[in-house]
Amino acid sequence: MATALGNNSGRFYSTLVKPVLIDCNFVVDSTNGNGLGIRSLKGSGVRDVFMYTTQTAGKGNSGLTNPMAHTASEGLILVKLKENYFRYAGGFSGFVSPLGGSNIAINSTALTVGSPYVIVSVGHATAGAVTIAPVADSAGSLASTWFSLYDAYGNTFIIWFSVSGVGKAPTGVSGTLVQQSISTNDTAATIGADLVTTIQNLPSGISGVYSFTAAGTTTVTVTSTATNPYGPLPGVPQDGVIPTGFTFAQTKYNTNLENWQAVGLPLGVVPNVGAAFIATATGQSTGGGSTGLVKVPSISGITSMEVVGDTNQSIAPMPMGGSPHNGGWILVQTLAPTSASVTTLIPTAPTDNTVIGMSFYVDQSSVTIAGD
Image 1 (cartoon, rainbow, N blue to C red):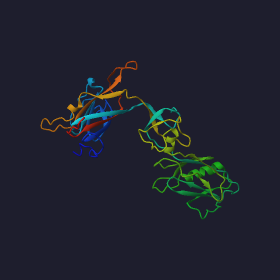
Image 2: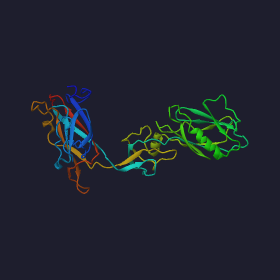
Image 3: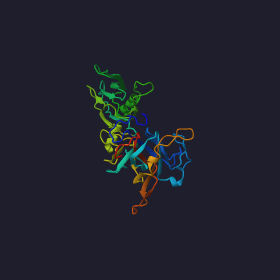
């Protein structure tokens, strides 16, 4: 009885004696190999949903074979409830449009401002990156100078310069001291190449993992190796008390959330597969783009649906064949006109990948109240 009355045991206001609201949703999938014509059925009060299928008819959760595996069944939905009920009081439904076209990357310029899109892959941000543009040494001018470099693992590296053996490490600073040896009057390009070797071998604290990759000469690009998650480095490198005179910049600095918000995902909405939004930009790549993908919504091809026959006659089947074949049946047809110029509706199969939601309002009591 508790199951028949739902997860809250029927506790909501109604003129019915024991009202139950049964909800379900599923994805139309006529080509699915399960032979049911649908996939991803959800709804604790529904045992099976059968629709037209191009495949060999499959068996549902009840062990019954899909009876809809022929052309005449297009546009019909056969629902089997988990329980018997005394009365069908009504129902309502809705559709979620399928998706169309190819995947569209949000880190390009392929979106159309003002158009709707649905996330199909959350993706990830670009790995955080900074640049370091060194200056040449002049007669030992870089000796004892230093700058701070921050990784995504929580480390701070203090890189200080020893010029032809002259120079000393800073004191009273917080971070891992790293000596960078150069020669007197080294050019900016030579110093940049030396920094590449040093930086790409800085330890993250995780065995076998370095904090950065690095490349370049007159401008050194330093990229984070952290991928969980991908995202910006904690900050731009900074000169120490004794400055190097180098130029520092942060070039890849967006989080994945920032990338999605930049193309229109509303503030407060977490980017997840299925989330819909209206594009406010054609794409986002400044400061590092996302590998996220979207698709455009298509149409279900359906304008309405209706129950077929008197559902009260199939809401409580009797046990037969030595087995309690309980669980009410509800037959529904989906309707649409044949064209824009024709107003007559005919049974029409929804477009594959349309999500259909249904709610059925039933009564678990045989008691009839005056006026019902």
